[in-house]
Each structure stands twice: as structure tokens, then as C-alpha cells.
Length: 553
Ligand code: ZN
Image (cartoon, rainbow, N blue to C red; front, top):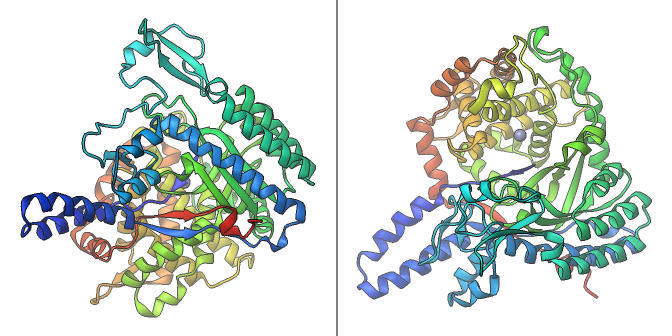
């Protein structure tokens, strides 16, 4: 699973702006200007960021491994292109405009990932639901009728025989045989250089897995790695790209350098989970379950993104592996991508705070607080209750379409509650004002995800709940001030409300809460419009690779 961080709203202002500009121009010119202006603004909605890290802590061998790992990850770009669209070069050759070509590269295709996959090139139809994993003319019924043992496999393409029209499958390791042999070679070469034995083992097993599409052993080995400083997540991983069935995994690669200092701190926090569960501000009957203890949590700097994770809005936290068999035996690992978070903090959250947080509280908007809040959100998913206490089954079953929004809301609020608890114990540095003020600023960021997104709804509910409890005040100058004591109380009250709604599996109660509080009122909308008018970027793109890292020989 992965978590993205998107802001989607610039589009509408752009369109209206273009309309007024073009009213005065002759017709032919209108069209060209229109395309240029819109495309330039599309490009500008992504702000460019250099992906680097402190390499001075790495050994000579590790520095030799990085170019090999980056080369291996880079090949994932080519595979992902085939999975999401088809032939990249043919598409690029059809387009003359440099900006449009650039936007195609950012989106890995002609559909805008920040705008519901709308096509941004004339004459291109809708994006096929099944991307390029299936024939674009294949209907669901045809797939259901197709007799095949591996048609639902994570690692097969479905294709159509041109002569007979019949469907057939092609395993990834056959489809991409040439490229994957190259990747396996690079990983094996890196394995030879690896001094950490668990990393060495993983790299060998991963190389093998790519050649036969059996990832189990390599996933197990990946979970066993604890002391490695370098890491690579590579292969067909997430299934979001297959919107038809969600069966097919898409290729991606992350090259990672573990932040040993932060990772050590995080391991300590995870050890507090049982105590934190016991201290939840809710009736005992809602906190009988044991929190997930097997998981581990680490912080990394990413030095290379490729394929699926590099398309459109960028991932800032991942939770792997997805294989439930591995999860049962070894748990899962949460990876916090620190430098990517820092980039989004600097380029998006700070400008939002400049506009919406009152001047004398802006000093409390801090990256460390943003990082901690984001991280404890992840940890908090493991707290609370997974099964209802009244025989309504799991919370997921009972709350149905509201489950995700409430679960995200729970993770947000319990995350801050955990920070508060650990801060009281003296386990976390800094001022509670940092965490609370940064938390409020993050709400403005996240309500912009809109009502179509679970995080968006969760943030609207929390914003209105906080407002009713007096946790913040809106000032006459259009900024907001946190009322710290009242926010502390509101955090407890909202935690209690969400945990009991989950424990009771109270579908009616949640739908009432969402109907009443999951809304953006006129005042808030005006404030959000000010953010859009100021052209605060939507997401980031990376300058990355050996050259950026200074590793080019
Ligand atoms: Zn979450």
C-alpha cells in the first residue's frame, strides 16, 4: 500500500484564466495560445526537486552499489510504460510541443493523473480501465468467460490473438525477458558488493524472483533485513493501475538509503504500542485488542523513483509487502520517505501555512512535527479496534463505504494523541505547539483532496469538529489561530467518538457524522480558493540519478 499527497484544484482557475485571455485573440491564434498556456500551467503545477541524501556515511562498496541499483530501478520505467500505455516512443513522436512531451513523461502517458486521468491530447480517448494489462477492447464478460488458470494472476498480461481473436496470457517474466535478465544481472552484481549479509541474500533472491515471477522467498528475505543501510524496492508491486479488476501489479523501483538515527527512534516508539493502546481515551470495551506488534517502521531518503511510483503525484510512505502470506509470518514494514516528505513540506505545506496560519504561530510550523504527525498516523493504524464488539463482524464490514474515511480519520487523530502521550512522557522533543499548529496546517492541505478521497472526508470532519470545539479561531485577517488547550480536549473527544463508532460498527452514526461534518462551508471554501489563486504547486517531480548524487565517474 502507499500513500500519496495530492492537491487537486488548480485546474479550474487555469481554465477560467485562459478563457478571459483568449477572448481578444483571432481564432487560429486562440487555439495555439490556449494549448501552450494550459500545458505550461500543467507543467508548472509540478515543482522540481533534487533527490539527494548524505552519502558521507556510506562505505566505498555501498557507493559502488548505488549506480547499479539505480540502473536496475530505471528499467522499471520501461516496463511500467508498457503496462500503463504501450509504446512510449510512438506516442512521443506524435507530439511536437516540448511541454506536452514533458507532461506525457510526468504522467507516463497522455492522461492527466491529477485530474481523474482526463486525456490532455486531442484525439486520445478515455484511458482504458485496465490500462494496458488487458486488450483495450476486452469486456468484463469476455474476461469472465475466458478459461485460463492464470488470467487473474498478479504477474500476467492478457492479450488477444490477432488471427483468431482469442484471449491468452503472457507472464511478465516472458514478456520482459530481455529487460529482466538485465535487471537480475545488475542486482546480482550489487549483491557481490553488499557487505550486509541479509541485503546480499535479498538481492540474490530478488534477482531470481524477477526471472520466474515468484516473489515469496525474496519478500520473506526482505522482511528479515534489519541492519542494511541500502535498500531497493523493485518489481511488480501495487495493483492500483489496474482499475478494471485490481488483479495486475505494476512495475516500480525505489532506491533507498535508511536514516539510521530516525529508524532507531521509530523502533522505540513501536515498542510503546501496547501501553498507548491501554491509554486510549475510550471505554475499556473498545480497547481489548492487541496492537499489531510484528510491524517495523523505518525512515529513508529515496534517491531514485521509477515506474509506477514516479507517475503523477509522488508516494511519500509505503507499507510492504502486499503478500498476506508474508504478512502473517513476518508482519509488514512501513517505510517513511523522509526527503520526499521534506520536499512536499517545503514546497506545499509552508506556502499554505504562510497564507492561512496567524503570523505569531507560524514559528510552530516545523518539518520535524510534520514528519512525526505523518509517521504516527501510520503507527496509529495499528491501534484501536478491528472487530466490532456486538457481533457485527469486522469494523470494515460494518461501516462499508465509510470505513476508509473513518479509519483515516482515526489514524490522524490518534497519531496526534500518541504524540501528546509520548511528549508527556518526555519521549518526544519539541513543543506540543509545533505538532498542533502543523497539524492544523495539514488539515488545509488535505481537505483539498476533496470529497472523493477518504483522506479528504476525514479532514473535513475533523476541521468542523475542531471548529465546534473551539480548537481554533478564524481571525479577521483571514488567518487561523490554534487554541492549544481546547485542541488538546478536542483531540481526546474526537478519538473517543471515532473509536466508539468503530467498536459499535455504527453505520448510521457514521453516516450522520459525515453528513453533518464532512462538508466544506462557504468560509472555508473561500480560504481554499485563496490557496489556489496563489498557485501553490500541486505536486513534485524529481531531478534524480547518479549525476544529482555526485556519483558520476
Ligand atoms: Zn492512513
